[in-house]
Length: 284
Image 1 (cartoon, one colour):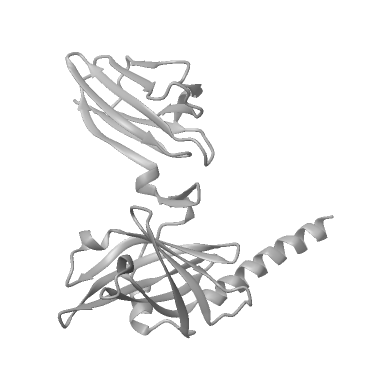
Image 2: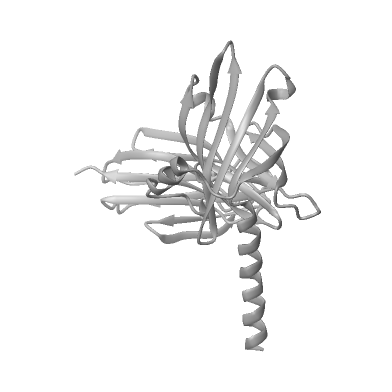
């Protein structure tokens, strides 16, 4: 039994490694931005493997009035089935455009054809508004360039898969699934926190922790308004509002905080498995 389990896990590891290796190298293709032929965008994707993760650089270039423009992205991702999903870690640079404009790109997916060709793949380019471009890429090299290799070696920290969550076939980065409500200085007197659902039939439950200690666990906000009274204010108060759902149900909530006459209020949508977090520092 143990031998069969070992062989099964070995097979899965080998299968992943083989599929991942098929994606490493240089891929090139192009698409027409928003379907307009005058706005042709050339795409170059250079991918390398480190452990069970794939990392790389995505470069886009277009030409307008004899001027090249585009964006360079640092990406990382994983293989799901036979498809490669690469999410944006950060915008490395903008060429004749701003980094803010470059931020409209969310992820790219590559799908090899059914004949298992390792030289061609179908691509899907996703924008932040969830619209997408479809195109074809061709593998033009098995090794990434020295420039990209050096760039990857200079990156000290890369987000891991836990920084992404899949919601109805959409991959959302950490900053979307985890909402920072802010950092505030508070007095030593009582703080009242009130959490209520914006939906009458919210199906997800919430857990609240204070400095990693559970205050409320698996509470249905559709049936309850959560009231938390903090009487002993610590020097540091890290409060997490956690959506316990799997990949199906969001939590749309109103969170209010009151101390004396000071009151703050947030309307927040917490993704499945995501967290809204609040940091309160007591004044000396």
